[in-house]
Image (cartoon, rainbow, N blue to C red):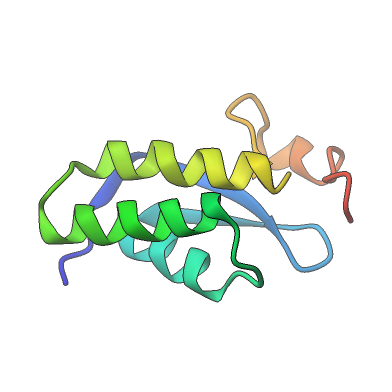
Length: 94
């Protein structure tokens, strides 16, 4: 598996509100697989990452599907947040 990089990393909340940066399709794939749950959005993110790794879709398409999953689960740190402000904008579920 080649690590296909995203043009822009995705930032998500993990654990008790700690930010995590996902730089590649492989990072996003592992995150989605390890996520507790079985939602349609999670399944779509996993399928999209697999398709990107197989060369069937581009990395940015997989990034978009993964971002939709993360947004639905309220763990996506939106692009406007910076590392300095991330801790001040904790997710609703933390």
